[in-house]
Each structure stands twice: as structure tokens, then as C-alpha cells.
Length: 138
Image (tube, rainbow, N blue to C red; front, top):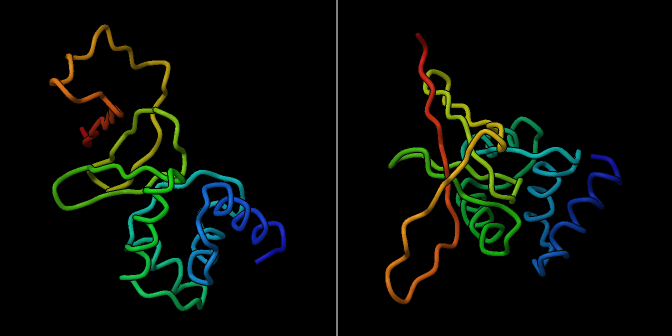
């Protein structure tokens, strides 16, 4: 990987106070090294790691993705009870979930409008609203 990719990954981690271990740097470079946003699941990221002859276990990938989410570097998007995606784009925005391929992509943000959210129960605030629009083939 290039110096720019490595530096971008290191700066991304440091910006959130995440210690840049070897494994975290490896995953950060794969996730944001080229400057593009990604929607990945742990398994697809592990496949990318293996295809690049890198050595990071699937368990480490799960743990690292959780650390990145806790640090605010990524958001976890639940598409069903069995699958989660991790998104490097952290602003509020909707997603398309393509049921036939299992792919998650960004949906146009400007097309979603909420008139009003329900009031949160006493003692709670709404922290985030995730919108996943499921698409199926005709």
C-alpha cells in the first residue's frame, strides 16, 4: 500500500484517539486508504484481508470494527437479525439494501423527509435514526 494510504489510515485512527496497532492500521488502510467510503461486513473485510495476503483473523476484525464504531469512526447498520454492515460514512443518511445480492449502498439523503419523530421515553434522547430501504427484484 502507498504511503498516502498508510498515512490516511493512521490519521483517521489518531483523529478519534484510537491507538494505531498493526492490525488496526491494516484495516484502516483497507477501509479508508483510498479516501472512499465503504460498507463492509466483517466477513467481506476478512476476504479482502486474505486476498491481499495480510494476516488479520476474523475475530480481530470483529473486535476492531467494534472499536472503530465506539470511537465514532464508523456506524454499524443492521439489515436483519443476522447481518450487520459497517459504514465509514458517519453522517446521517439512508441506505439501500439489495436483497438479491446482499449489497448495502447509500441512498439519496435529500429524498428522505421526516415530519416528526416520536417522543423518546422519559430519560432518553434519540441518538440516531437508521433508514434501510430493502430492494427486491421485480
